[in-house]
Image (cartoon, rainbow, N blue to C red; front, side, top):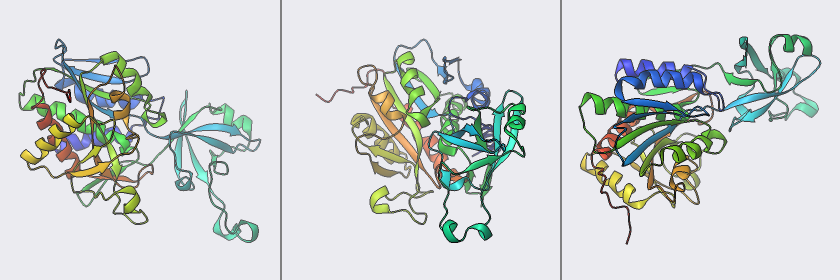
Length: 356
């Protein structure tokens, strides 16, 4: 990945974009994308998409989701301690000792998830473990009124302060790489199309959807707006070669071994075959996954919309999902960019999606 693209990646990750409040991250993403597209649009809930060849009737979507998991303030006690509810799949196990920002109309209010010292966890508390209902936020206030005076209220959203990092020149890491790493990938595909002067015989819609973490909601909305003929969704999957993961259950996937293609009911086999053929022809290493009833990604929202949109999923492995130290291999991101780019070059408006 080029330095200027890595800088964009860093800025994008470091910009809070919690589910339902994605607009600051979306602005960073769109500012990067603008030079490589013909036009852009924003829907009522904040999904952003850029278009290449907007006049074309045949429409192809490449998509990622923009939102990050977070918390809501759900209760403030008389001493100023705050209790929380999840916004998306936030993990209570990692919360203690984390520094956070509470979003208010006055700006960020810093706070911490506190936890009793080890010296006090004896007797009945010897096995005390964090749960969603016992983790609390401390913003340095001593009363409920002081918290309210800071602009904090029930419903205030909370994001972690952890920022982007690079390890060993191989891995990018931070919070919310799920799936803003995918957002970087689809933006880089648009950049590659522009820089190589590749002309596509269809309209390409580069979509960064909101609210995936609470049920694929942004994708559900935007597919009805665009009404695409085909969709390639990118997301992250688990690197199962880290400790404490059962590969017999979760599959065998490794950072650095290339993007992952998924088999499953929502995945259109002809689109999947096109992607696999492209990978093999271009000597792009890839891995294979099998989904059960659903992929659990925006692929499902696109596939089952508008009478059925032929869709496929290209993921890449990620370590420590839904933590603040998520990690991806930069080479996997580059390979995913190339795979999507080369696949798009093989798509034509007369592509036959019918099985019979």
